[in-house]
Image 1 (cartoon, helix red, strand yellow):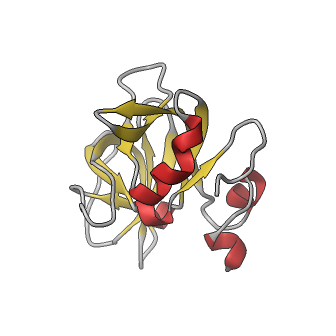
Image 2 (cartoon, rainbow, N blue to C red; image 1 turned 45 degrees about the vertical axis):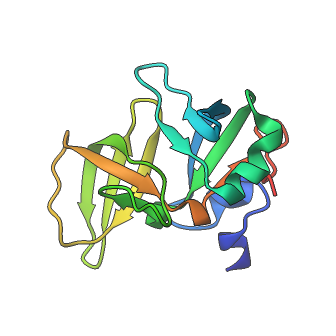
Length: 152
């Protein structure tokens, strides 16, 4: 459980857990006096995530540098932003919706990154549908792409 909640590096983040942690490549930028993760997206408009205070403290030394943003599938929320715990809403496209009974796995893409969300089973989703998503930033991680270590 300790490894799952606080992975020390990218290997552990991707190995522990099923489905594995979602990993987004990008960089940290200062936008309107806030530190923001900007996704690397060669096919369209990059997604942006305004970092929480705790993530911003960790990312301070990475402004204008590459970074990897990690979040578990259960910490990807479908719907509008929850100011208390989540980032601003971004759009994603559903590639596959896999109802599992007690939960549904949504295989999503932002155009730059494919990732998985574990959501409630009460909604019906369709392939190609655009949805708004947010991330629980209190459970997100930042990794240094050169060392592959978590930024603590």
